[in-house]
Amino acid sequence: MPEITGPARVRFAPSPTGHVHLGSARTALYDYLLAKQTGGQFILRIEDTDRKRYVEGAEEELMTSLRWLGIEWDEGPDIGGPYGPYRQSERKDIYLKYAQQLVESGHAYYCFCTPHKLEQVHQEQQQRKESYHYDGTCRALDPKEAAARAASGEPHVIRFKTPKTGTTIVKDQLRGEIAIENSQIDDYVLVKSDGWALYHLAAMVDDHEMKITHVIRGSEWLPTFPLHSLIIRAFGWQEPTWVHLSVFLKPSGKGKMSKREATDLIKDGYSIFLKDLEGLGYLPEAVVNWVALMGWSYDGSTEFFTMPDLVEKFSLDRLNPSPAAINFTKLDHFNGLHIRNLDTNDLASRLVPFFEKEGFAVDFDKLVKIIPILQVRIATLDEAPQMAGFFFRNKVKPELEDLIAKGLTATESAAIAERCLRELRTLDDISPEKAEPHMREVVEAMGYSAGQVFGIMRVAITGQKVSPPLFESMEIIGKDTVFKRLEKAITQLRQAL
Image (cartoon, rainbow, N blue to C red; front, side, top):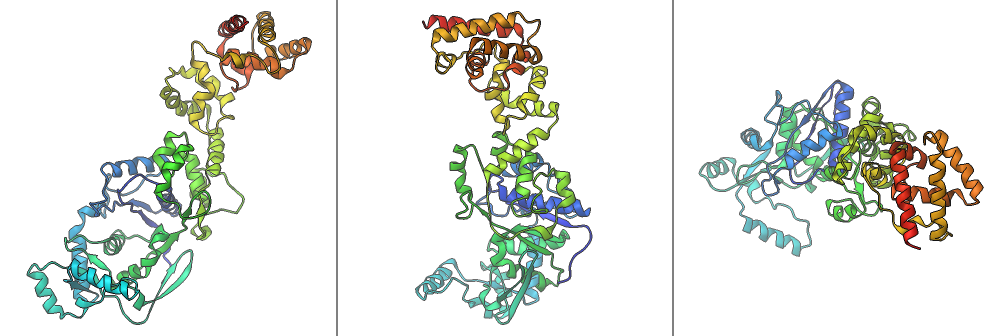
């Protein structure tokens, strides 16, 4: 099979049957990168002929998720293009025309076996401990007789007439040549009795008509890969470059990752669905970086990639067919890197919805001031309100036990808070440059540890035991508020005596 060179035309062709998961995201990303790198086109095609599994709203979620990742398509159902329609449900007549061509050329045939008859054959094969396959009853029918029966309206399907002798050799970009005896390939149904084409025919027809040069898809299609090549060859068409990606394994590395694990993952703050990852505070840039490296590497050591980096460096030759375990710790790592790579205003804008979701009225100018001390301390955007919500509260409510420093009494802690308040009031301002050196001298003079003294101040001023740097936070909060919160903490400690 000759190699296809030049601009790549690739397609991402999901079924709208549920939420968009990581496997789909990776396929779409690799398609997009190859198209952009070669100056080609990325096509979005919706394979929606399985109406029983169709989920209302799934197509819209799919498009929203892709755009969230930063993936735009050149042709698709919403924007059109020269090779539409881009929904398979709108292409029924096209598939029937090509199916008829296969029948007329002797590469397919009408099958009139009833579901009852097929079930009987299946049971007999089970008893003989054979794998299920069509027994060929209608394969031997006279073509003219079969055509007449079909024309009369007798219920039928159209099956592919697989060669029963010889070997089919196919080539996968990752695995090289794969050979299979034709006797092991079933006479698959191409068109159902209701007139709808199955994937085996529809996808091959669409790829041909849309001039697809590279088919990147999941390894679940490897068992029917020879069939798909045979169908294309039966038409005499040029085959695309086939790329079957590696399998995703569970985080444990044991067993294939599936959608069923999502319920357990979400309890730990993770998900395999893009819509969840956005809500959990992950950046699309980080998800793209993470997913790109699950089955591909640039040089074995470089890890941080932006989308432009990936467009420049991506290569099919660097793909790895070995199964890839989903490592959410890596996702947290990449998310932190990409958070720190954002400019201040961009990160502030992305954090606003997370603060508002927790009920905070966000002062954007104040949030911008907070970013430098917050940016290096969060791994996900949803951590920000918990860590920095106190900046937007009128009052904080520290727990009494948190105000009492380790190894000290409430009386001693109250005295420390009073001393801190007095000392801070002597300063012209409470900038870190002035307040921190002064307060460290005070700590030394009092004979307590910095952890004890600053711990009391932190809880009194922020209401929490963990926060961004204390003195930087105090400057943003402002002198008046800092003094009021210390006064309230002193009162709270005195009332506990």
